[in-house]
Length: 295
Figure 1 (cartoon, rainbow, N blue to C red):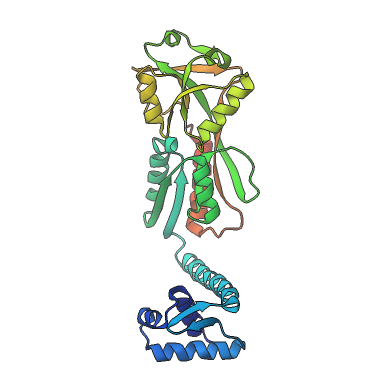
Figure 2 (cartoon, rainbow, N blue to C red; figure 1 turned 180 degrees about the vertical axis):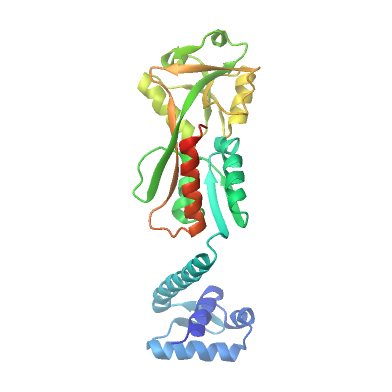
């Protein structure tokens, strides 16, 4: 069995058409047919059911394709690992993070890292916590920065820092005159919440439940800027971290107690996933920076 036979089989399986596969592979159709026939002869079974010009994988072909694709993935991974070993300061890091972290933390951390490793490229994506988890599990991103929600056996988590959450109200709201408030005191206020699937929604819902009430959600948003805008318009109150996007002339931040409202921010990645040397350097860089700098 030769490597080109494996590649030919995968392409025929993908296109289900010999002529189209031959065109993509830049070989003649008869040469492709002979290669597949030789592969089937070696395996002792036909891999395709042929009906006129149409071909489809049979049960043997479907099973073999699964093994072939897994083998090709391993070989491509091996090639990538060798490249990374030769060029440990190069490569692309796929990083996903929460919208709120993109306002201040992410720009600073990227600038600092790229000053040390200017040849590195980043592929960035922002999403809610549940979407970020999905990206990690499917391999769409290498690592992520997000808030801790719950243990997951498939993901490795390293805490970086804790972030206080504040009640935000319009500067004209009656509560704007106070500096600290019990969480239960906002139970009757119209609430501007994040949509389901966002980490802050999960965290705030849990905190309110601990305080003994369910927020009266008037509006839902996806970004802190939108939530803050609705609060500024006196359409409700909300709970968010103190970030640069908040206009302190139009919004008042009030410290919450009973319970104290915090969220934990950390790095996470899929257990067992290959991390390139430059990705591992980025993890070390972020961890060391979080220990000496308050965000």
